[in-house]
Structure formats: structure tokens, C-alpha cells
Image (cartoon, rainbow, N blue to C red; front, side):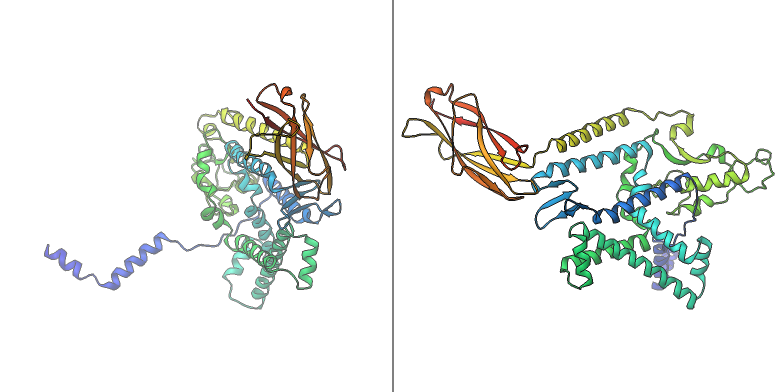
Length: 475
């Protein structure tokens, strides 16, 4: 006990701090910048196609016009959203909800089918990072040149390259922020306002904020966003199973790995097909070694497949040492792509998508809401008729003013009285109308009868809306 006590007493605070420092260093490793190797192949072409299409849509759509206005514009001050020939209002929240549900189910479907396809080919973080990496390669050179430049001392050449690269990054980021705000403020007006230094504080804030976010995420954080900030990397495993197509290394074929001459027979050397060149690791944008198995850091970009296939071609071995396959295929050689989960997701997605298309095709730019007067069930007029009073709220969801006429659809002899013969409503305007419906007591077959209010546009007879209502009389 005494020896132990002496040893404890001999521990100095400096030594304790040193041990704490060692522990802290082991738990929190300093980030090392990743320099992904540029690769070529079928999946690289697919990623490039995705980048061109998605960037073209993002930067190009705000400049399109439709019927004298911006084709796609989310006009928050006027509470309307233009998408080409359609205009949506806050009352059309159903469509947004349906779109979000379809997006979520699509993510589940494609993840269960083939892993992180969204992350590898369509995620904004991936798309903008690919563009920033391309700019970096054009200015600083390929992977080896970038690494040598990073280790070299600061001089005029290095400073010029770095300033040029970051200048182009910042310019693209600001243009990205400007385009983003252009979806909410007419982009041409926004551009003139910027040139005249006459834009509002909110527009200025969002241009700078979104530009800063693009510059930081795509230029500096890069894989850190995918590994530490994106929640999808954490819960993707719940959507995978043994029949999900994932990027995998064939250990049975590749191990044991080792270098050899091209003329050597790997079987006679007791080696697998992997020559341990680490090109697959160098090509990975998140810096993982796919040969260690599926890891949550893998974003499914398939750069390692292109890299490995190019090496296999050079050494004369078959392609596919790293490939899209399933866990069952690697273990037993059999797999089942079409399985209940995939079929259920596909059926639900098809049903939802079809419902939205039908709803949009049959959508009427007119909304009518009927509220019966609750203060009195009914009243008797001087002529002895039964009368119910209704409050009608009419919303014109068209892009032009409309004039409507109100009528009744019923087999019974109902009489309609409206406080104004024509109902006028400007675009997006809600108008309230009071309507009285009368009937003789002897014509009422029961205490409560149903009928429909019919609202038809005089301006455009094709626009019409029906709303059911009930009339209450004496027992």
C-alpha cells in the first residue's frame, strides 16, 4: 500500500496533463485534407451528366419566362407560387405535402434498391463539391501537384494560385446565392438592384448567407458534411438489407493482396487479384478504404469502381473486383433484387405520383367554402317560406380577375337570394358573399335536405366549382 501511495504521490500535475493531452489527441484526430484522384469511367460519366443537368436546371430555370412573368417564382410577399403555367396558393398546401411524401418514399425506395444513389449523384453537397474540385484541378493541377503545392513554402506562385482558386470559388458561391434569391425575387429585378446597390436587407442577407454556405461546404468542409453533419449517413443502415446493391470489394477474389509484376501469375504467388495499389483509396472523396467493407462514410459515388476497373484493365485481370453487388451475392452467389419491400415502395410511389398528376390535371383555379349561419337553424319569412342563411368565401386562384355567378343545383324547388348578382374577385383575392336559400315547407321531404352551390365564372365558363350544403327546416 505504501509503495502504491508513493507512486501516486510522485505523479506530477505536468505528467497528468501530458497524459490527458495524449488521450485528447487519440480521441479527436486533426483533419487531414483529402485530395481525391481524378478517375474516368462509366460512373464518372454518370456523375458528370448529373452535375451538368442539375446545375443547368438550378442556374437556368430562374431566367425562363412564362406568359410575361418568371416561369418559376416563389412570390412570398403575395403568397403565391408560380411553376410555369400553374399558380399555387397557401390553400394548396396539399400539393407540397404530397411532394414531400413522394420525396421521402423515393429516398427509401432508391436506398433499399441501390444504397446511397442520392448522395453519390444528386445531393447538392456532392454536386457543388464536384464543381469546386474541378476548379481546383484546373488551377492547381492534379492530385500530386496539389499535394506538392500544399507542402511547398509560400511564394508568389503559390499565393497567386491560391488567390485565383478562392476568387473563382467565391465568385461561383455568390452567383449561387444570387440565383437562390432569384427564385423568391424576380431575378432580373434583383440583378438590376445589385448593380444599382439598391436591394433590401433580406435579399442582401440571403445572397451572402447562401453564398457563404456554398463556399464553406463545397470548398472547405467537403466530406466533413457527409461524415459528421448529414443525418442520412447515420440511419441509412436501417434501409439496407442483404439484397441491397452496394459498392463492395470482393474479398474472395482479391485476397490476399500484394504487389507483383504484370507477367507474374497471382495463383503461383498465392495472391489474389488486388495488387494493393491503393488507387481506390486515392479516388475516394471521403478518404475511406472500401476494401475494409461497407462504411457509413461511403457516399456511393462509385469512384473506387472506376479506379479499380482501370487498374484491372492495365494488369489484364477481369473487371469487377470492386463493383455494385449485394451481401448475399458475395456470400452465396445468389441475390434477389425484386423483393416485397421494393415492390411495396414502388406501388405506393406510383399511386401517389399518379394521384398528384390527376389532381393537377383536374385542378380548378377556384375555391369556395360554405358556412351555414349557426345563430339560427332556420327562419320563416313573411310569405311563410323556410329560409337558411349561408356565408360563402370565394377564392380566385387564377392569374387574372374573374366575375362569378352563383346558382343552386337541386331537384327541389329552392330559391336563391344573393346580396350581389355578380361576384368580382381579383387574382388571389378572397371575397365573402351572403346567400339566402328559401323553400316552401310543403316541398321539404325531411327536416334536412342537401343541395349544391354552383359557382361559375362569367369571364371563363370553363372555371366552375361545386360545394355541397344542407338546409334545415322544422321537424
